[in-house]
Amino acid sequence: MKKILVIGATSAIAREVAKIYAAQECRLCLVGRNEENLQIVADDLRVRGAEAVDVLALELTDSATHQELIEHAEHFLQGLDIVLVAYGSLPDQPACEENPEQALRELNINFVSVVVLLTQLANEMEKRGSGTLAVISSVAGDRGRQSNYIYGAAKGGLSIFLQGLRNRLAPKGVQVLTIKPGFVDTPMTTEFKKGLLWVSAETVAQGIVRAIDKQRDIVYLPWFWWGIMLVIKSIPERIFKKMKL
Ligand SMILES: NC(=O)c1ccc[n+]([C@@H]2O[C@H](COP(=O)([O-])OP(=O)(O)OC[C@H]3O[C@@H](n4cnc5c(N)ncnc54)[C@H](OP(=O)(O)O)[C@@H]3O)[C@@H](O)[C@H]2O)c1
Image 1 (cartoon, rainbow, N blue to C red):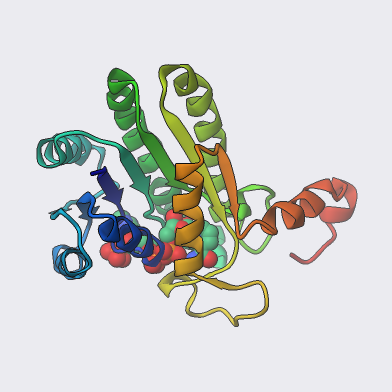
Image 2 (cartoon, rainbow, N blue to C red):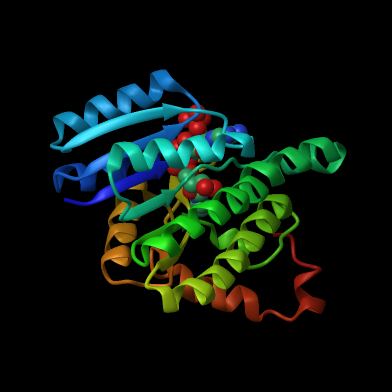
């Protein structure tokens, strides 16, 4: 029976991942900022077969809460096989351009707080010498675009951080998985017009669980985003800077 910590457990993608593990009778500790919503997720997972589910509500962007988070999870789970870090926000890019304080808040949610939290979690996993740190980054971090470069910078920085962490932890037996979804139909993207490239949170969740099982390092979800980003990254900067993206 796997012991799983989900951070940002009210996220649509995280909920679908947790459903898969609940059906495998895993033990789950759910962390987020809204107790009521976490309880709703927990009740659902219990019905779906989870061995046990606990919730912890705290402010993830406040690094003073991270020690409590880790102690609580370890006490409840009595071990730690998989950590999924899923929380994040999609910034209003024009608002961030107007207001540097807003840009700072977004960078804190999507990059700084995640790095600070993972730094502590990584030390725990290193001591154990096993387990998985699975973190949701984004294809948006592969190249900066005018329409969302604050988000892109945060996710790009996160992907680089994870690359370094993987390099450090691989010899210690800890898997560090960078998850790069493309367009996923979730509450984060309700405002967007959906098209052919869009997929459900359920599809992405299946890809995440598969990548964890296969001990992958980086996964694009769905897979075709690997090719799309390869093309986007290969466009010379002198051309790219003139494109409306
Ligand atoms: N949807 C996409 O197209 C897409 C594509 C690439 C990557 N991603 C990434 O996938 C991850 C999951 O997103 P999702 O699509 O599942 O969206 P979602 O359903 O809107 O979930 C976002 C999660 O982040 C939490 N969150 C937002 N602001 C927060 C804050 N200030 N402090 C703490 N938690 C906060 C939310 O908590 P509450 O429930 O309390 O609001 C929720 O759990 C994110 O890291 C996102 O950047 C999404």
